[in-house]
Image 1 (cartoon, rainbow, N blue to C red):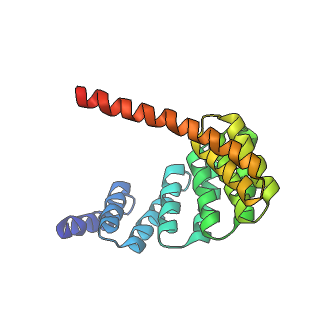
Image 2 (image 1 turned 120 degrees about the horizontal axis):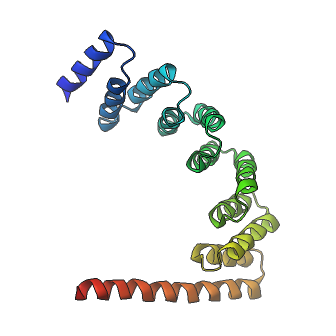
Image 3 (image 1 turned 180 degrees about the horizontal axis):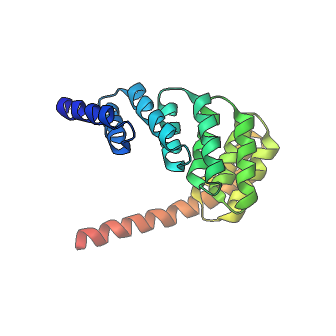
Length: 202
């Protein structure tokens, strides 16, 4: 690996626009735990090709890894202007806001995501979690209910709705949600056991 790294460095010295060499140097740096070096290599790649969403998103992820959350947020937002429909990038942006403690901004971004996919139970669930974290019981409950309506068999949504009702002292509603969750869990457990039995028999 030392020799490989040396040759890659020679390659970018001879040809400073050689993208593959920077990518390999970044991979070696990550493997060796030198995340700041990897950030440097991907920064160079972004300088070479500023309009490639995947390069910007990779650098944003690396910036998250080294704790540079504000820089990561700026890059995620820029990458989304290049590829507005990239759902994974939207989720990463929300994560960056959360890790920076910018919960209101994360909530706002999730609402923007729901404008294009209003029936996304996962997005509703995440939004409910954030509202719960800032102490907005009504909004959290509403989002968990929407998640259950969008996907009635979504076990986690039923559990979280029950938990939110429990926190709010609405014990009858909590019991109903937990009963639904138990029924879903039993069906899932039956399926998993069935898979195990079938695999064993095979």
